Image (cartoon, rainbow, N blue to C red):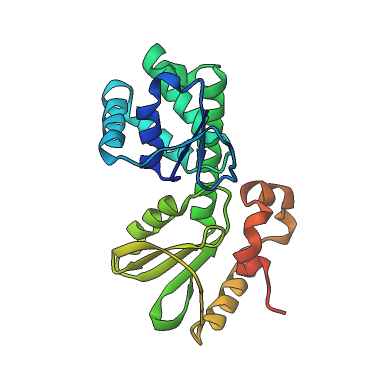
Length: 242
């Protein structure tokens, strides 16, 4: 049997609550998947049930494990739903220590968490802002994992007195903060107009970048290792004005 939920975290936890006894017998899919099966059951999100699962994981297993569950849920892996759900059940049966074991679900889970954190860490250091209309600072990126929350709160702590937008281009979602008052919105049409001084500051940054670099010590292989080329698209120093 295939169980389908609304792709929200609370919807996923509702499935865990309703089908806890059968988690090793069912398949779990979100509404994003292209499904046309006869034996398919749709689960309606129930906040009360989801909250009970959250509370139970935190109390009986680990708050750290709960945070890692959220991280894995925001990863891009196709079978993340069933991996997380079955590991939750295994943890209740065998103890939270199973998360660190060689169990195949634990291995898959930790791989998702590691990949998410690696990408989030990378973009926290690489994200570049530019000034656009109405004095907003704007940054855009493309990622495999849904890291908008982590990125946004990272910069919210550092720029509480600014107006800024962080745009997840792959998912057409944006984090908009106006002096620490913020919300996440869906973007239908994005019309960005750069401030007239932006080109000057971009050129100034490139001059600074070139001035501090040492040609004799350039190590492109190490650079790519620390700063994967797929993230270079929005770096001024890697995309010079012609």
